[in-house]
Structures are given as structure tokens and as C-alpha cells.
Image (cartoon, helix red, strand yellow):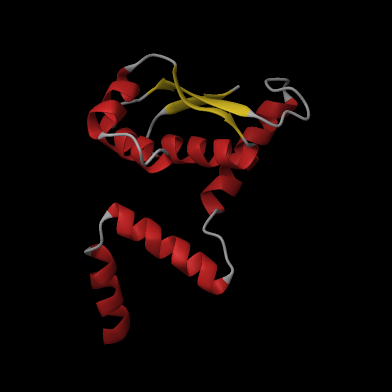
Length: 129
């Protein structure tokens, strides 16, 4: 690995989560790309669920429900704060401990799938309604 690439990696490691989110957004805007590969994977895994009749055909708004935070609650709390930056640490913690907590209400399919992907990657059990 070149010194230049190594320096970039070192700089990225030092960024906060909010700074990383800003960096991703800036790179997406600059190069006209999307960092939505996990969303595509989540959509592919959700397709069989939709085919089995779990969701109505043509549904345009979704509620993201956190069924269970799982064992890695810290990662789930971070994901909750990433999904909703207005949540404080205590609010996100309380939400992660609440059974069947509504994370998003009336979200479009892309936003709901993205939230589900983030929470599932953090180890939570999530349902879309």
C-alpha cells in the first residue's frame, strides 16, 4: 500500500461518526455514486418476505419496528442515532430497550430498508409494517 493511501486510511480512522457521514455524503455528491450496497442486500433479502405475503403489494409508506435490540446494544444505539441524529444518547438507549419500539413511522421504502439494514447489521431484529 502506498504512503498516500495509508495516510488517507489513518485520517479516516480519526474521524467521528458524524464526520464520516459528512464524508460519505460529500463523496456521493462529488462522484455521483451511492454507498447503498447494504440497502440493496437488505432489499434482496426482504423480497422473499414480501412475496410470502408479509407486506401489501404497492405499499408506499412503512413503519420500522425494533423487535429486539439483540446482544450488541451499543451498536444498535449507534445505529439508532445514525438513523435519527436528533436522538440523544439516553433517548436512543431507552428506545433500544423498549419492546416493539417504532423507529420510523410513515417512511418511504428506501428509507425504511436503509434503517432496517443498519439496525440488522448492528444485531437487532427489525420488522417493516
